[in-house]
Length: 164
Image (cartoon, rainbow, N blue to C red):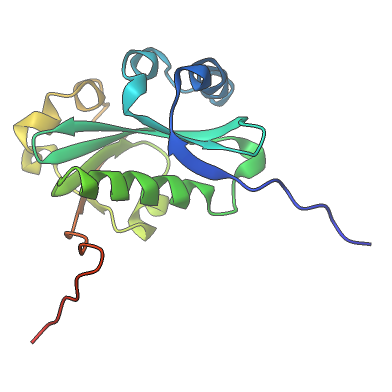
């Protein structure tokens, strides 16, 4: 007897039709929803073939830095690399927008982000453009971690980059 495969999940730019299901997911997970709705055009979603939202991530651009926001994956999709896929997708988007650094605030997932090349950083070492975002302004410094990931430029398609 074989176990049924779960439908393939893809990451894509969020559409207006994705907002209500995404807000429901955040409600179930106990994550704040107000800022997500106000900045929906900056989000990516993880959806199945039926376009059911199973996860999301936001990217707020501030100068040459990006603030990663509201990374969420529904419980039934966890443990299968979907959070990693969302972070990799937001990292690729940040590179396309020529950002040099990503920042985030986390309260419970420090080890997860560390595996994805984010390092703890003092808020004093974050650029002013990042510190003034709502995510950082509302952060409980005593309970959370500020994290940073430098972005290396991605090579242009069709170009060969050689090192000496």
